[in-house]
Length: 502
Image (tube, rainbow, N blue to C red; front, side, top):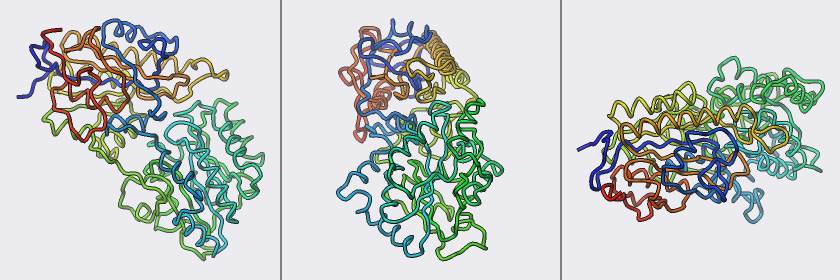
């Protein structure tokens, strides 16, 4: 018999709902595991820390990106981050040059004398943080005698709003001494990978990549700097091409570097609408869309999706937490701010946004309010809500304090957490408040508080990782441990404590 929102527990009966509030970007210091690492106003979290069972989660195997952190929770596996497979590929004996797929790509392109167009996100952190990998790949192609044109998508959402110029300099340092690698275009993510990108904005990115239009006479570095000085976020910078870039030809190759292939799907459909590179017919056509994907494709039926030939493929190896919860005869509700909805759907639910059952809230407080409504309705066993919105490395120029915007976002997260904690205390249930990533460096651990139900201030919790959140949720909900999960319950004895005894 399903139990909904039981106000009090008796014996070993679990207190439902179990509410998991994920705090994006929160970190702690080892000398004070109950407090956020920064001196932001977080009265709700501070008050909760005085009442709840507390522990900290290690960051040694925790990814810095929100998407990978969500995957760790969803699959209850210790994720090594989206770049782990590519790291292994680059570090293998002989490096990328020894990879059969890479060699095949080089042979095809050398045969027709085409250039390689490397499409990647230019950022050093977040889920798209592959700047150093892109530089190594570009250098490897250059050593094979192939000219490389880099098409950089700028972040500004999961990074500081003006971090792209620094990432560009980092890339150029990594390819120093290589003469045949140059930046061709830059495009803010709003024009390439964001949900809001439409036909018009994608068309602007396509025009820059394919037709080198419009070109910036001063160069791309100066263009980015001018836009930042005018107050434009990196992610909103309009597509532009370098004055030396001649545009794309049909005998050129497109190489895509991204941990989630669906992030570039819409743009690729513009570039490969009929399974060939969409370039003017008047240009030489000796090779029909020689292309490769270095990343983690996640399905798709379009011709462009089917045509990709991955050098490295990552597939989930563990069942999804939402599926386990539903298989345990428990009802589930999930909510996330609109800006994180895509990542949430892909990583927590393992589905496309259109097929997502997650409530996409307008902002963080609305996501928290959705959880509060579900608690009041007393019809849901497990509630997962993301209190997100803090960009990675969201700091001022000194790199030591939070930017005003990031500070306000953390305070908004705290308000949402306070609302959830208050209704749990009135209606009953169990609240797990946990940080989901370490993007606000120099955090060295993640906070984890469990409040209500069988847990009190004195309830012992063991230290763990994000992989232990899923087993803990199941234990608190009274569901038997799933042996396919890599993690274990954070409750010290691995079982739900006797509520009557506490």
